[in-house]
Image 1 (cartoon, rainbow, N blue to C red):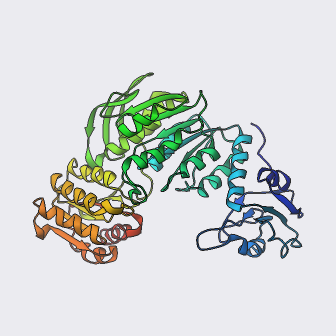
Image 2: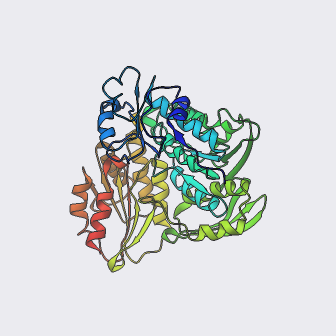
Length: 468
């Protein structure tokens, strides 16, 4: 194993195209931080500028917290250059952090797998990391640190020289994926899908697809793209990829395809998976066809890294969902909660509702759906579609939470035939939780889903307390 990459002040300054105005007394940094609240002694503090703060103003506080060095904009070091720590001045601190991460990625020699898409990024990342971790030393994004700051911080884990980094790339505006691809220089790129997430920032779904298609940029001939064969917008844009394309899918023919799919609701999914390396029987506790597609994408990556199909089948059988991303909670008195409260968009929400449709339950099928944010002018219409989907799935009760769009969802369900007595609307998750815990009966099956800003996790926590 090659030795760990040493983050010496000289190497860091060169990677950032910065000027070291004070060398300090520390030979090297133990890590990198952008937050004085979580900074650990010996780390390098990078004073990034945000919309509401200027990180350079906290450089003195970082030194007080034990930082071994600070990175600040040029001309800002006069007050701290006698602080006996390394002080590096740069043109722009966020770009400096990105340049350091890129230099670390290049020096590490690791392979990088980068995942983007409107839904399923985190689950695909986690499943891929689990599959590859059976044969390689793997790092992955911490949590969902997948933006222009979070990705560089995650890539700093490459100083330990693992074999593979599995990272997700997030975006809500055009140009952002392009920046992240430049930083990560992925060997394998995974594009899960195109959905309505962040539609409020784009003119159309095609515009979202074009922004996601930045994952294709800068690829060498030996690069690999794992693409969703079931998504026409992905397929059409993947044709421009400079490297090799491997497809995955359920509905259409694909290199890695699930056939004979058995939807078992909250019990998970079974399928036969066909691949260029042979076939295997898949049984997973992860719920829904969205998660099935995520596993297929991870399988395609695993095949590229020569992970045996039998190994991936074994791993898939014991997968656990990421927190608030499809957790199936078996509570007292036979109540089952599907906690999918981390985030939501219309496509993912309709898929989650379909899980209730295919689930066996002794009680009622109930959905608590929070407003889905960042949908722009189409918000009301998309929420109405979800309301009608709840009726089509045969749900017994629908609870909607949020503003006008959530009210539109409730109204659409009533318009589609659900009795007004079985549709409830609340403006906040706290209000819903106050009324809802006494409403749930023994044996009920409850889906809770919504955008983070609506905080539908409050409902989950109340149910867990009520049915402990």
